[in-house]
Amino acid sequence: MDPQEEVTELKRQIERLSLFHEIGKSLASTLDLQKILQTVMEKISDLLQPDTWSLLMLDEASSELHFEIAIGAGADKLKDVRLKVGEGIAGWVARNGEPVLVEDVKRDPRFSSRFDELTQTDTRSVVCVPIKGREKILGVIELVNCLGRESFRAADIPILKSLADYAAIALENARYVQRIHELTITDDCTALYNARHLNFVLDAEIYRSTRYGYEFSVIFLDLDHFKQVNDTHGHLVGSKLLWMIGDLIKGHLRLIDYAFRYGGDEFVILLPQTSKQNALMVVRRLKSLLNSSVFFTDEGLNITVTASFGVAAFPGDGRSRRELLRMADEAMYLVKNTTRNSIALAGEGIRV
Image (cartoon, rainbow, N blue to C red):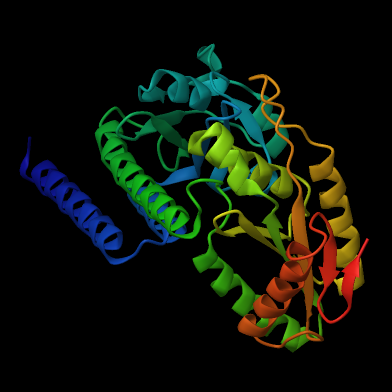
């Protein structure tokens, strides 16, 4: 290697070290996944200068890849596009977990022209590497058409693999943080939100509704004679029944509604932008649904359960979290101490 080539190679090494250093700092300084991935992809672009590039994430449920980040000609048309694992070069890499360099895609049977037709581009060369987590493939990084060169080079793959490792670390860190957050706000018996998160959501809804002049309603429900289930069938059956009822409640609410396990056999439902009278219709449906449900039929237990419901609304029944919960709780106890299996509206008494 002549002196000039040595200088050029030294510059490349310095560029790579600087690149890795910057991404390492980014990983250590923020948990913002999108920011880290954007930094990784921008540095790849600066170093390898692809014409277009993308980061595709793997959706395990559907075994499909979707474009998390896509930059370059026609990238805007890829926003909602998905490809099956195994489809095209990126799909092959996601399935096999191995990097691929294709200098001429027209000669490679793995190449899919579907995306060229969609984006109105002409793919000539591709380099693609998997993003590998500790136990599984998380996605792929794909670069298309190297600017100023006919093709990418084999020497580009180790750099890309190192940068993909950074992306994998960022993704797994983000998932761990998300999981920790979920555990702090979720009830482990029912998988509904817990009482701690209820406080946060109620405060946020009070602020939002005050600002925009909205009503919202809070439903307090307590299962009737639930202790008999535990005494007769045991706590394992009781715990599973709580999960079933929580799932039943959640499955019959809108996407904007919230369901919480308040404690024991008590649940709270928050209905944003819902008046007390409209909340009454929701409660009647839930009451009817609960009354018509029979649990543990496969085990031959045929357990039925009813509930006492109380409803309070913002701002008429209270303007603070404590007031609203107290009013809904008192309405529920009015039912609990009299008829059971019925509904009471705060300040208005029992309704059929």
